[in-house]
Length: 182
Image (tube, rainbow, N blue to C red; front, side):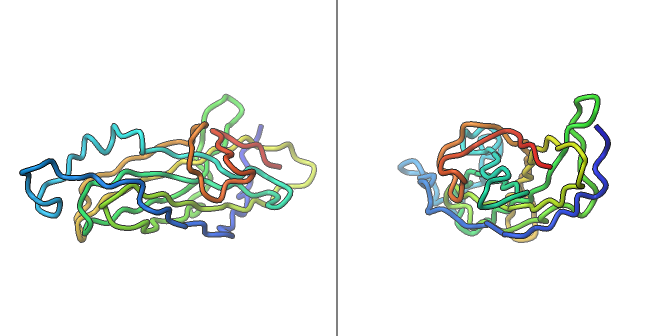
């Protein structure tokens, strides 16, 4: 399999829709208010609410499109900001995941304050080369928690399967680790 010649990724449909908070991190009785406590950054990285998945894969309604969705836990501080950046990788001839060319990313998109778990997504429309084989692709989501201009934690997750609550999935409830397009 050869490296795709700039698959001409066009971030066609920004699906940065936020879901209602899936529950906030409540402060234990007698503790300082959430806005005064320092966030537990290790807990963010271990959370089951930190994931990435493919929720659209070249469907009849969205041909040549891959939708990548991410979920990130809140740090319990409503004033903190959470952001996600979405990009794709392809599987090369020696079965290694390789980044697509620079610029084929959504850039960081704000998904809301840190009071609760948030989800966001981005769709990539590919322009396959006629007569060439399909490429196996996966998504990667970079996560960022910030207090003002200070980044307090970052994480990155490749797409994995079997995640619930994937708003915008096609078909409904679809969640995959990789997707073949072309």
